[in-house]
Length: 317
Image 1: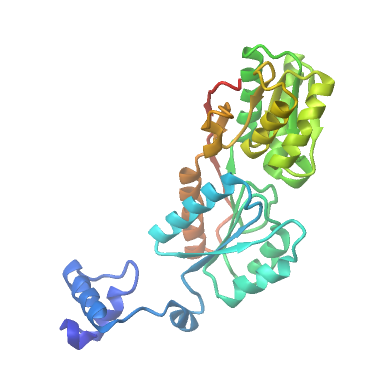
Image 2: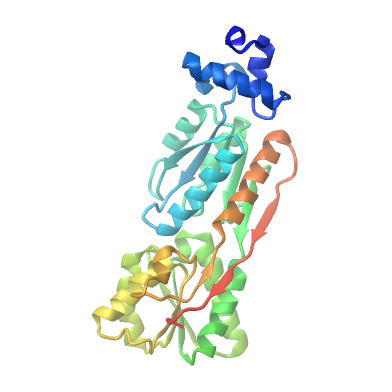
């Protein structure tokens, strides 16, 4: 390849090394020679030498939730822009995390990103023992040398109360699978705390999972107890609530509904859902920044970054 490009072998190596010092002209010559010769960099072979690949593990659960698709897309795009290569490892609450850990370590990943619905404890412990940097998204667990990025769930919970009251609701409820999600718990707790401070009646409707089907089932309980203002801790579940009310002939907007995440379906005319935008692009940027920093300085203290939420007003409240 060096002969074909008319450059040194060292220049070829630098051309294929991210952030290495090489002129644009030389890099272009090398790329053109590589194209003519049909050469591709074998990143897995390179990882055998470096003991680390350019792969970053994305550990995620709840892939049926449209928000997770948005989140993973932004994470993947941001990683690629920073010369990392994402590898998705789906898991679930009841899954054996040892399988995920084994796959991460077998691929000699440079780092790991764990999203909100995935179980982190064993993953964090094993990867920390192997010196693999980790960043958690919307997770409450605090581990040494593990960074976190958190959405402003408290603000969302507080503001949801204000939105529902301003819309004329008087008897409020929050639907949340608090036991299965740190974010859901924080949003529900903030909602209830704000209601208590204002002297407003607030009911917690617990569900086993924060998904569409449990939202649909919760609609019947809302009607039974006479609730007229609802905060569903994510849009996926809020859509289920709206369809559940529609099946009961009660989707006349007399029951005000607020969701969270601003998934694409929230803007559909059949839902027209008032919600909170959780900015996946900003979140992904902070996550990858922390990961890159942790790779460079593995012994730095654990850090927590917050991302804001923005109210998106629509017809549902």
